[in-house]
Image (cartoon, rainbow, N blue to C red; front, side, top):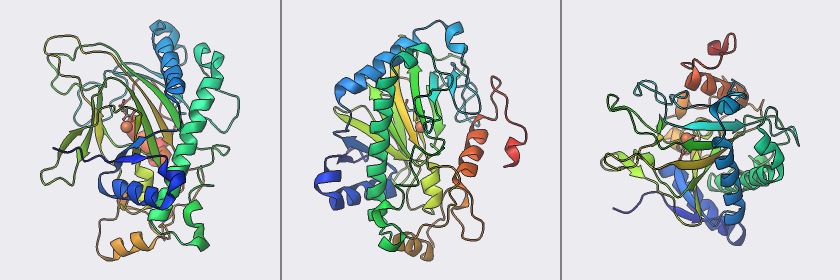
Length: 343
Ligand SMILES: O=C(O)CCC(=O)C(=O)O
Ligand SMILES: [Fe+2]
């Protein structure tokens, strides 16, 4: 069966922005995921980032735990600490992560391991390329949604996604160790089913697959493999844009499963995710898009969490915080901020 996740060439963003916009928009309106071929980062730059990741995760656990994850969404999260699908998973994911946020504070990585600080140029180059690709993709989204020039046209989202301003934008290194799932736990996953919650996510997979996306529009909805492809990264919509676009853009469930290796220990896997969020403090009025408004008028479902409303406007940071707390409320390794679940 043909893979329903389309491949879009990033070179079109400059050579033919109109075509780029239509291909990106269609992918996000249908399955919520696409491959981006020819990402701006060279294979060498991506490999450098993966090398740092491998160096970091090879450190002793005690050392990694020195900078433990907190509700600032920064730091180390160990195996089993994150349960993305708590209604299904009995145990947390068989993975460990390191998260970096606070991109609005140049030159600073509040609480960063030495291996990242020593190679801060590699990390910032990586982050800047990711951000630029996200902004170009967002331009395509605005063009596709036909946002009028008086509202900013293709640039409607650009200044709202500016990493010089505070936001929840996050760079996450992931390592799935060569651990066998527990025989007693049929629900064991590398990463449980979830949707991301920012605007746009970029995912770099190193060699080993396991990512699956839920194809909700198939005649028979099913999980679809999204393996690494040469010179491609994976791009998807997060809940913020699903909510903001009243469901026009789809934030789709995805997960990471163990490779099918019989009795053998599953092979180790590395990935890197960049979660691009809108700046803090932006009111999410329903989008000034004739396409979005037409779909709503025709009775289309209103989007994640009820979708954007003109008379009850959520701020971007309120929405992100609500999602972060809801995803992590079960954690035992980090203290939920007072009053967090009242947001
Ligand atoms: O590692 C992967 O391939 C996916 C990770 C992911 O979906 C996430 O961290 O949100
Ligand atoms: Fe994800």
